[in-house]
Image (cartoon, rainbow, N blue to C red; front, side, top):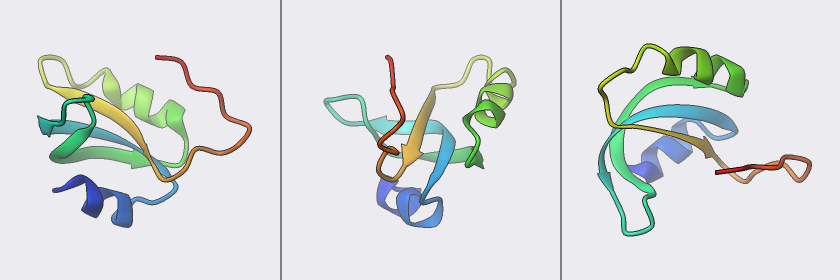
Length: 71
């Protein structure tokens, strides 16, 4: 599934993606959504089940104004 499709289908949710392709800035271009939730803690729980996979966690939409993100 292309990122644009993920963004439309899961707007406002955190998504756990097994990616197939990244761009030059390491953004997901295409991949399979493994889990999605408006609650990021649910995504982190599911992350434990993904050993050995190429994984990305992203938010499908604009980050809420009161949210801080560290990489």
